[in-house]
Length: 301
Ligand code: C5P
Image (cartoon, rainbow, N blue to C red; front, side):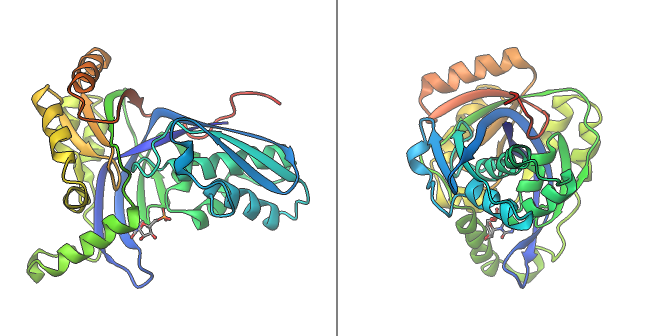
């Protein structure tokens, strides 16, 4: 199973809800950076992580893919076990929903392995209980996310956009970024605080219908930019380097710290990636494009 990471082309945040979550209006775009998840029959639910950041991920009962497999087994009375092998390429705690991607892939892979009679919609609603970004990892493409980000509506998107991703040395905790946003809110005058319902990113949706990155670039917006930069100030250097090297826009991906630079085409992407790599302003630099499909089977067992 191959499952993509995402960037949020718009991430508008509303006030904190009673359940601690924030009401969102976000535009997700799945991009061509994939984790691979392989499921085989096993004893209980076990997980093994591969890749350069494997040591940063717990593989026990708290792992989101393990929880996904357990939840599916419980809901559909499955007695078989599974061994999951996850090849991690989406940065860990990077704001690209890598953990959610693995959970989405685990749901699909286990449903196939165990022959569970679950519809795609069943998996999407199970996924939503595991994390706000899991439904989008199943769906892929380009979508408007509302509620906690899990209420999805497909968005019309023309063409393919080229991005350069700059991965940071340290991850950022999503709850910590939202908490910092809340703290910052308390210090601004009431008239400047977040509305209970975030604004609809209509200009991003309009721009996506043109297929023109120069029209999309000025519409990109992320309300988590200020709190993420407050927690990781060195991101300003990465952003400036990309802007000075000619990126059309620099965007924090989700709650960060990954920075996504929008460029005009794949050639500009290669140039920018070489430039950023040589300046050493990121742990790793990758060229990707989007939108791409959600979790997909790549191999028959
Ligand atoms: O749903 P998920 O586990 O991915 O969310 C991680 C954390 O991010 C939540 O516990 C919450 O602190 C924060 N969050 C939020 N509002 C959202 C999504 C996430 O406050 N809409």
